[in-house]
Image 1 (cartoon, rainbow, N blue to C red):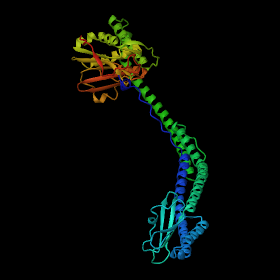
Image 2 (tube, rainbow, N blue to C red):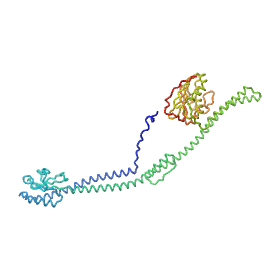
Image 3 (cartoon, rainbow, N blue to C red):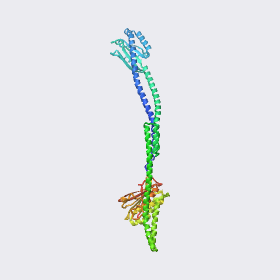
Image 4 (cartoon, one colour):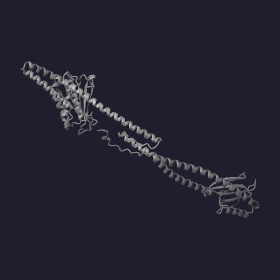
Amino acid sequence: MGARGIFGKGAPARRMVPMRLWQKIVLLNIVVVVGLGIIIDLKVRDIVTASMRQDLTRQGQSIARHLADRIADPVLLDDLYQAKTSLGDVLEKEKEIEYIFVTGKDGSLFTHTFTDGHPPDLLAWNPLRNHDLAIQLLDTEKGYIRDVGMKIFHGMQPELHIGLREDAVREALVRIRNMVVALTVLTTLAGSALACLLSRFITKPLQQLVGFTHTLSRGEFGRELPVRSRDEVGELTATFNMLSRELAQYREKMQESYKHMCRTETLSALGRLSAGLAHELRNPLASIKILFQAFKDNPDLTTRDMSVVLNEVGRMEEILSRFLNLTRTEDLHPTEVDLPAIIDQILSLCRVKMKQQGVRAVVEAGTPTIIRADRVMVEQALLNLVVNALDAMPDGGILTVKSGLEDGMTLLSVSDTGPGIPESARSSLFDPFFTTKEEGTGLGLSIVDHIARLHMGAVSFATGETGTTFTMSLNQLATNHHVSWSSTISRPSVTP
């Protein structure tokens, strides 16, 4: 049983759907536009963020200076009411301010604008230490807040801290992001539509070229495509048109050469057949001519003379019959053929000759044993092969007949242990009327080859110093075709 019978059919492979050229162009456009949109968004966000934070810092410093001048006296006089009033006024006017707190002369918290109490670590948010001005970006629950800290008096501990919300920066970034996204989407859609439209102009000629190559692969040469442009596609179209014309011309030349070769081969074969047929008929005709010339001088013919004439006429009739069998193209008459029975029958016909020559027969009959073929033709072909093998072993030897199956072809092989076929005769072995025997018409192997071809098969041979093997293949499949050629069943040797 073959691998398919053992393992069964494999799962069908998933076929990958190829991406069209216009799809690749559109996809490339989307990737480029989206990539540029992301890059532009990141760069613009960085530039706008840096610029707005600088403006916010300058604004905070300006507010802090004016407020520091305003609350300087209340801080020195510990006037808490006046200080809170000043902070409230500034907090009401400047909407970006989140909080304001002031430290006193001893560095402790003096006043603030927190409504629900101040955070416990408030003084550690942006400590000035020995600096007159410090700016710190704080990440709080309400978002990023820029703390602008300033000394109210140079060299003294009182500090003023103003916390500025970055709402404007955040809103500006949101607007920029929305704008970039909108522009990216619009550009992607417009670019994809434009790329699709332009790619159609590019891919349509290419699709026509692809279809044209399929036309050429089917052998439809001579067709041409119109050249509509002078670019690379136009040059490629012109090249394909030239290739189509050259292939058409080449095919016409090949057809003319083939017809001429067939006529030459037919005449040559006819000449060889005629020469062989004339050579084979010349000897019987010469014998008959001599007898009838003698009959002209002596009208009395003996019984022996008549026997010679009849034998020679029979010989010519046999030659013509074999010649007609070789050249006829009659239809096959397939029937159920028992190969072992045919082999036994042929060996029985040749039993006397095998006994006289001291040849021992060995049969190895594998499956199939029953085939559909033309029984008469198979018998004739096998008989010719067996007779040739016996002629190669006049002093005895081993005759081996095998049958079996290989690659769906039924095989019949006949082997001998003779001296082999000379090198000079191997190329002409299947030519009609070619023979290496002193007696014979030279049509036996030609008939075998003809019968094999009628069965859509062939005849091959392997020869050497230890013998020759002829193998005939028949394309008439057997009912049981799962056992290979090597799986043979040895049958008892047939001895004369």
